[in-house]
Length: 156
Image (cartoon, helix red, strand yellow):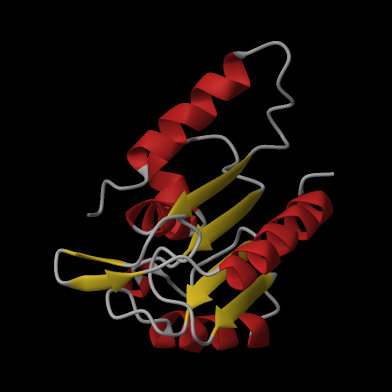
């Protein structure tokens, strides 16, 4: 799990090598396990391990495994959390978010109280590996709005 962010930092290095990419305005976004990678990529300790340059300018994590969040987060972070998530419950992300907020780290989170894990994935409700997943159109629409607003603010 600790290498979850390696691909993200590899992509960052690649994007920065492209002449049409502004390497100072790259963000990372992830969903579930990929949300955990975004959490790790936002943390100072992992940035130092993965890249000698500056890391990502913004990070967005959808229903991530919150044990990967940390108080050493330095990158602006948006966490979109599913309140009815039986796989990656949001409570630890909220606790760490409150600590970061007190430390003046740019962090935001939104909990969608009735949304389960994978709330942005269209399709019928299902159980996967013993966890309930279902689409929530309202949560998805708001999450998309939150992401657009957050990235516009931090990637300008």
